[in-house]
Amino acid sequence: MKQVSMRVASLTLDEINPRHAKQTSSVEESIAALLEKGPDKLLKLARDIMQHGINPTELVVVMSEGDRNIVLEGNRRIAALKLLHKPTLAPTEQLQKKFAAIAKSGEAPKKVQCIIAESRLQAAHWIRLRHTGENNGIGVVRWSTSEASRFGGRSTPTEKARLFIEAISNLYADDSELLANVAAVRDSRITTLGRMIGDPDVRSRLGITFEEDVVLCSYPKHKMKPITSQLFDDLAGSLSVDRIKSKRQREDYLREVEDKLPKLADRLEEPEKFSRVTNGEAKSDLSNSNTADDANKKPPRRKRADFEKRLFQSVTLRHVTLRTSELLEEAKRLSIDEMPNVAAIMVRIVVDVVVTDAAEQLGWKRNQGDLKSRIGAVLNQVDPTKDDPSLSDAWRFSQKEEGALVLKTLHSFIHSWQSNPLTSEVRKLSMAYSPLLIKADELIAKKKR
Picture 1: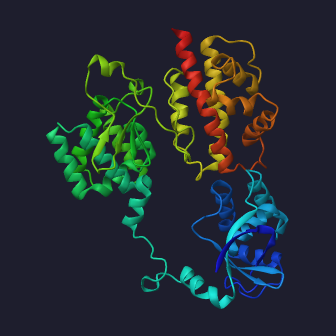
Picture 2 (picture 1 turned 30 degrees about the vertical axis):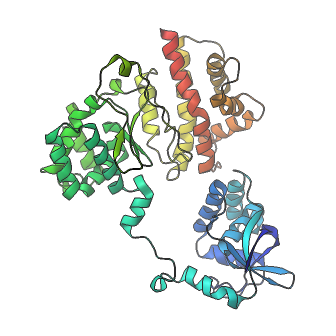
Picture 3 (picture 1 turned 120 degrees about the horizontal axis):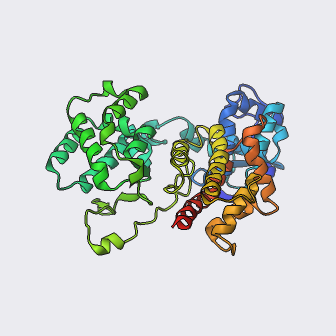
């Protein structure tokens, strides 16, 4: 078998695909048969293709038969691509609109890498192994829960707990009592700790976030110490999982320890980080040193994730009003993939609230009539020469000709019930306007001095 690149338009879906209850006779029938078993799955596959492309680790298997290139393996992927290029292939108007909306988020691949099989028989062994489980080790051996957790890093609550324990052990290495409680939790209560810090509201109040295998701390270590000591003391003692199982119970616990929690006014301008290093030892950028050199040293810049899962996750505002800051922190808890409609609305609201806050604090009266003008007022102040690369998308999306459509999209997120926001669209806007929010906050600080 040989590998070649083939155009999606030249590929024919398999009419005797084992996924079909009966043989189909056209591409429309084949697509309808695939959609019958769950249109949401094919819609999600289409969205994933638009966001990440075609999975390069799984090639499409094709057999030539006369003038047709029949897809033996990868029919769902090819069906999703055909629907992205021609949404009218979907059997209902509602599905046609959904695939058309997804297609607008970018440019769908027109070619795919394929393996050419001489016959169904030649490909049958590999296709069977792909779809029939482990086959005593010959097929695909699924990861166990712990293996998936180790690969996923911070993706599971337990792995978050492990990272948090490593961070705390490193940050407070001279506190023997705290370390004893940490060890007890690690040995017998790690899943309970995972339940606590798996809750985004708890993480927000503690001042920690996770970025792959990095723990980001939003408060100085001495401000985090009281709640950290209290939490591990409670978990090592009488705080069982039954007492923090539900969200309401975790909220009750936070109210009980309110006096130990760090205050919003103590937040760092830039989160500091704890991370693993390649030799397996823990490494932290937090320090207790109070030397002049350390005092003048700027905290390390947080690298923005390539694929943000939450709104404005790289943004921390210190000079806007408290309510604006709290609004942002609440918006940052939203998962774009899990709540795309709410996230889309909050993109529009957060941007508007922050630029309006800046205008009010700085006494601006002109150019405040609409969102475009309010954003433009900030942009012209923070980037008068229009050469800041971090703000290029904010300029393009709000002030230039193509920006009219983007602003219309922002408005439609709130006012149009026909709007169907895509996660890729929401994520793009969040990342584009994040530098603007940061610059607006810095401008408030600068003008007030």
